[in-house]
Length: 168
Image (cartoon, rainbow, N blue to C red; front, side, top):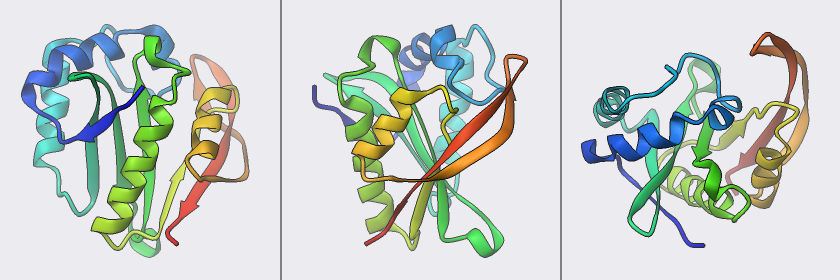
């Protein structure tokens, strides 16, 4: 199944809310997102992404057949890490396992590496999120190590995996 990444539009808020209002999706994300996630939450997020500095925040909707089914972004780090960006992404559960996330990650990396001075993109999926780890591996990321007891999610202390892709 083919996908594309594109800049956000305010009309994407309903599709975004439908995607994030799934507990299985939220269980793989960092905390701080409201549940249930409303269209207003979506509009607020999209407005923030549209007004963010596009040299530091590369944020896109993931689209399949004209419908927004997820989000992907890379956020520039600071200080001595200012040529490094952290990757984050999610897609609607019904699209898991179809290669869409892998394709979106590849597209984002190509965009960031060709439109910025970023030289390293990294991601830190939870240890239990094997699907996300496979997405990263298939998109050219290398496993760099385990961040032991690095997060608390849903009351559980979790390890995270460090993956990175370097600009060639």
